[in-house]
Length: 166
Image (cartoon, rainbow, N blue to C red; front, side, top):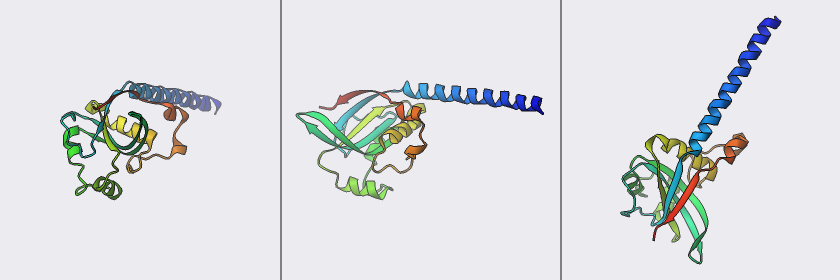
């Protein structure tokens, strides 16, 4: 019986090490995504600055102080294979999220659109990471219970470089 017990004890230990290794690798890969944010655009999304590339985007209510961003209350974070196409179709007439639909119908005067180009293979993980970390008001799909997040997950952040549109 003890031989059998020791065998499974070793397998359980090796499996736990393997899972930890996979988790650490995944966290390192997620942290390698460097986001270069472009912001200060109108919520309508009608801007030539929005590329026809994959990425993530965010709507937020921005407070400025002496021309500097002082605080952003994030309203929604989304992803797209084509940012320009997706953002321009975020029309209040077609939006399926009723709360976001109402917000888009009459956004606050200081609402802004921000976006960052992300490779297609990373779009899902970056969007989920941002939603989990920021917890925007109108995102429901990817919300996670904060109590279930491990300490390591809550400490991960994305390297960001911000570019504010003129």
